[in-house]
Length: 504
Image 1 (cartoon, rainbow, N blue to C red):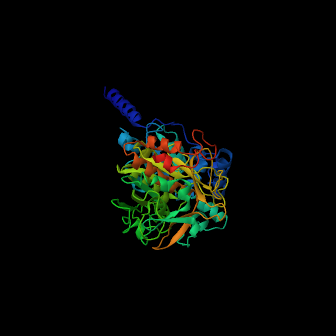
Image 2 (image 1 turned 120 degrees about the vertical axis):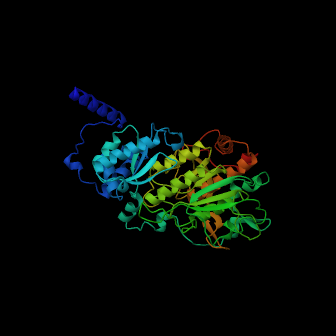
Image 3 (image 1 turned 60 degrees about the vertical axis):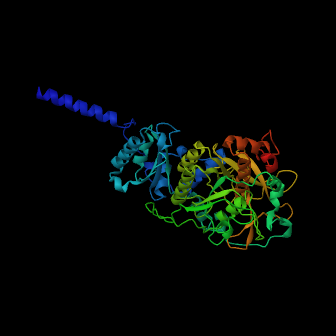
């Protein structure tokens, strides 16, 4: 009788234990000898390039177990795991069992890694169904990929761009791809028009009837969130002089979520100040005040502004920058005052955690503009970059001045493009006048970056004119103002926006 009870007890324990386990393939994990050594960074990058050239995109879901493990190996063994009950189960607040799923995945990892949880778990996102973990064994990745609760597994610190630049003997922080610089230039008088009270209107604004639209809307009451490299502490037009002249009754807030450290456990940010210059230019073209300082005015000069320093430069390459962008999108998603988000940065291929954060923002009604891409020496073969190609974002690129639409010298085009902005002079090649990093200094800025920030400003004009509208209504009106509407170009979307038509 005692033996019979013992057998029943053991059966019950086994039964309930199996019910609590994740439904994974329990077959043994056998790795071929040729796949036990990590691929080189050159081999990993070549596989990525092959996918980009043949299909126009790359996703880590397509990578073999060896390739994924190799990329993690070359990226400090850091991996991001997105999990959930389905592909669309990214929002923790809407998941009824996210904690249980997280614990189950961590159990798998600790079992295969033979390490305590303290050495495995780097962080668990409070808003999204994702965790950052340390994984050293290919067997662990294979075991995780068998789980039906895995949405994606990605190397979190594999630096594709830095590796490519190193291969080309170009420093990762060089101006060739970083988009950074504190330069200033004196504006040609032909590149602006002075309007009351003494503000310079960039030439490109007239290409889109923005000054005419100001008679109907200046962006009052609409908040734009800009995710970039921050704003300069030395440019008071984006600080203490934000409310001057005819720009009044609005607010500016600055946040920093970028952690300048190679250590993934580090959480101290380096603050909201721009240490690159790019973010300052984007904030300027979107919202710089209209006053008597004799400096360039922004498109929506009465809109509110929230800026996030999310990365060191415009190429979102590596763990801390991708974490920063994710955090910025999440924070803006959760800010009910924000209607528009603009990001003039990106990556060559998708990043799961950023996709999740963008989908969270989209689910909360935000209108999201992203740059289609500006070429570096090794990305000329890439079409629209990430995240501009996502269906939740609006892709914008830059074109030259002229009767026909021709892309700017370095701008990316493709079927994912929604709008174009004129930002390059046909004769001189000059771009858009902006306020520079330092007070009383100006500069020219171009590419799809400035086109994106300009479009975000136009959206603020439309939404301010129609405050009860939804995101989709604003976007529809902007599309109707495009010079290709009702058609859509295969390379330039709906074309150049007519801001006056969009606000009427």
